[in-house]
Length: 196
Image (cartoon, rainbow, N blue to C red; front, side, top):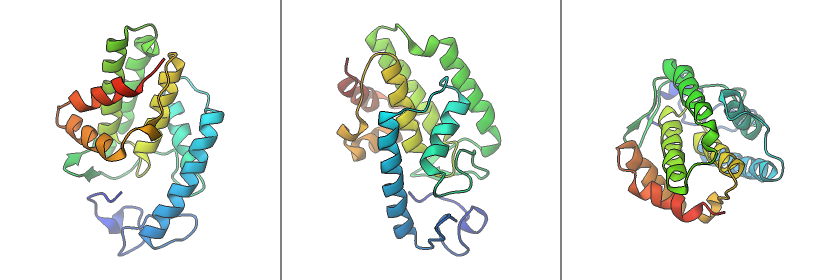
């Protein structure tokens, strides 16, 4: 995904929008394909053997690190630049740590959404999903990390979700709408796809 950024000062090869990577690939389409292949395989591994954690900031970073460590030196580290995409401005990079701490400590205070009525559970999952999206803590790979973390939390609470069953364009539209305060479609997506 392309972001609105100054490419010279943002971890890209000079004069390109291609992220500096361990394969030294300088073509963004080729990098995108390699990245997709690697993260697909790693996501499949996480389905079988989830990363253990306490649904906290370290857990979140460890998922990102596992997915992207073969590609980027900064895997598992928060971004150091500001990003915006498709009209959504994400959290200022200087506030990422603070916002993540607030988000994950709130999740802990809610006992990780354990024993909530289904409608309340859906509302809290949507709120968490939207918050993590707006924080957008990593330079790349936020959506994939977010979906794995959310799916693991959903399973922790005795439900199942398979994001591959969800239309990616519809999810993206619903996510963009939620960043503008319209949550109906995102709630419906989770309501339709979270199962016992």
